[in-house]
Image 1 (cartoon, helix red, strand yellow):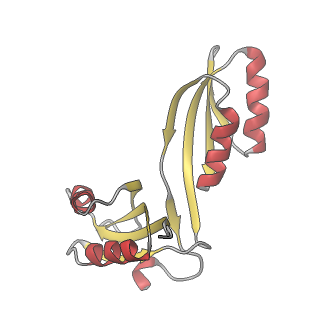
Image 2: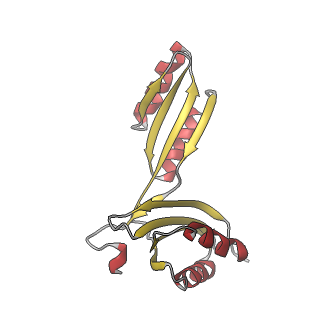
Image 3: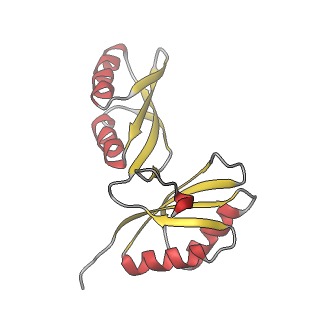
Length: 168
């Protein structure tokens, strides 16, 4: 049997009220769906929150997720994002670094268009934004240094073009 699993990114607008995230994650857990990434953020309308959800599955699973999510009274709109839409993640990474290592790390940070946002005598904090493969590539290059702390936001995304999610 062929495995047709892929990553799907769902973007939705939900009512801005307590418990919505818990109700969504509970819905997916009851159905055995594993969430790869879940982000929530305010919108230009204080009554709405944008949630970006990343899951792995096939077309059948994505259709089930879409249908079950759209049935929820607090979901105002939902869309399965497309490959050409815009996706970003934020990575904050604290790295232990000697004076010599700082120069090496700065070269890697510059190649990935990141920024050093904090510096102390024994460590530095790096900020990198981009798509998931860029963040993964940066992590692959920097993992030979001693990582003190890693904070990765998860995927957020927005459609290209003139229309918003609520206009679909």
